Length: 209
Image 1 (spheres, rainbow, N blue to C red):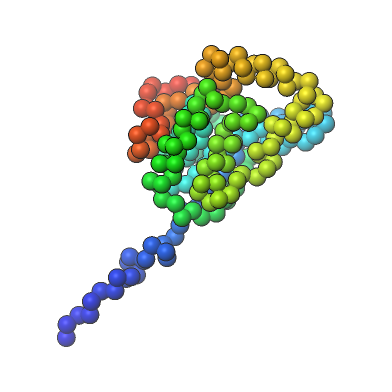
Image 2: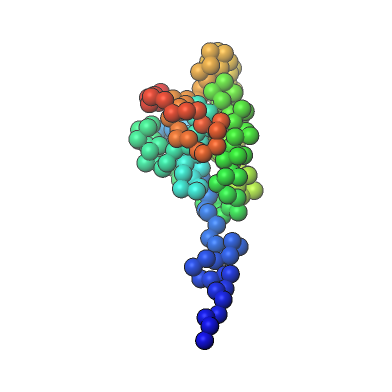
């Protein structure tokens, strides 16, 4: 007997809609190394559990804003580049129906808005960039306690006193092209993502500040 024709949806080749969709994780690092949780109540009159920096992990890579939009192969590579910045929490943002090609094309489109010169500690930082990534991938923003933390801090009496000083420093540093981005040393360290213009060509490693 003639063998029957192979099903177009054989077990070895599941249809696209049945394939597992990539999961998106927001990995939140505490730039204070635990000091924020220890000292914020006394200094600010409010509890701040972390000074967050957020990376997005998806498609087996790590994406973040540091000296521009960057990509690295893994969290281990990120840790090796910047030292033992502690992970505060990992947020499961859900599954994405986007492809890596679509995501990296999106990153190419927003890259001109995320440069060392456009970094702003209060309103245009690593967390707002990460939230823009998750909005594209899963139609969800990062939690408000991450996005709104600068405004919460600077709305306190102590924060209101410190805000003009921070804004002056921000303006002076941005004028010199440095900015207040704690990962500005990442520029040129991220690996190429397959789409020209997303990450600058790799150069010699630059130590993070």
